[in-house]
Image 1 (cartoon, rainbow, N blue to C red):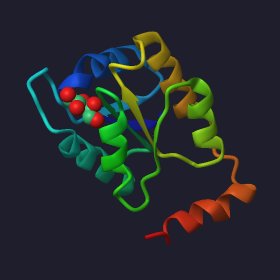
Image 2: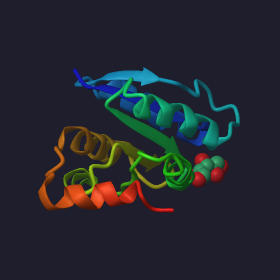
Image 3: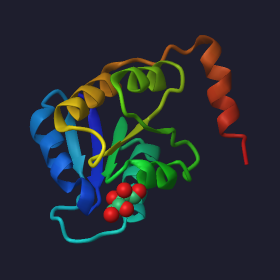
Image 4: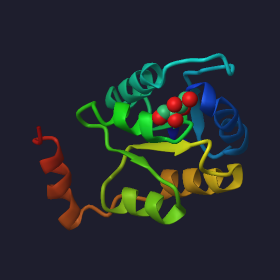
Length: 143
Ligand code: RB5
C-alpha cells in the first residue's frame, strides 16, 4: 500500500480530515495540524517535504487556503516537485510528465469531492519517463 504524508495549516484542516477519512486506498502519515487553531504553512510543508525526501513516504499532500503557500514552501526543497493542482487533468499531467511527488490543494478553491478526485488521480497515475526523464534531472541542477 502506498504511504502518503499529509499536512495542512488551519485553513486546510477540515479538507485534510475529509481526505484522510475518504481515501482508503493508501496509508496516511498525518503530521497535523489537528485543529483550526492558527498555524504557519511553512511548518507543515517542511515536515511533509522531509518525509518525502527521506523516502519515508511515497508522496506528500499539503493543504492550505489556496494551495499556493504550501507549493511555494515545498518547492524550496531540492528534489520536491510540488504541484498546486486544480483539476484532475493537471494532477494527471503533473505525474505523467513532471513526476510530481507532492500535491498541494487549496481548501478555499477546491470543493471536497473534486479534491478527492484530484488526490486519487495524483496518487495512482504513473510517471511516463522517457523524454521527460532528462527534464526532471535538469530541475535539480537549477538555481
Ligand atoms: C491562511 O489564511 C492562508 O493564507 C493560507 O492557508 C494559505 O492560503 C497561504 O498560501
